[in-house]
Image 1: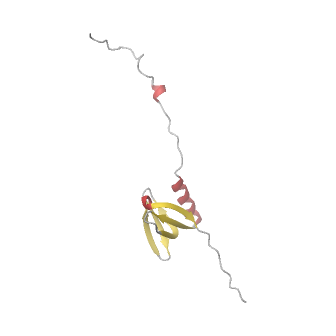
Image 2: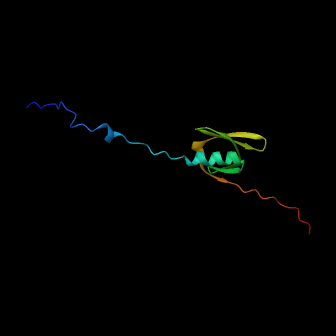
Image 3: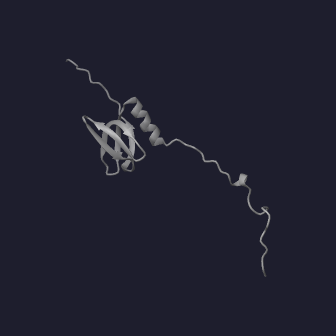
Length: 97
């Protein structure tokens, strides 16, 4: 009733079969924030509590985004952001009637 233990590596998978290379994909949120940081665009942040905040991105790391609203700086946690979009600023010309 004793089973024999294989002494050769024939039954074990080879190292080449086990090797799986990960697919590297850019994180879309990081790419978007890097772009608006570089271009200094206004961004609307929509939060989980149904509020929205508009400002310019100053900095970011893995967990937070630092935005400027007027003269104030506000730190947002990335997990609280549900979506983001750029804001087009339009200049209103003084019209005389």
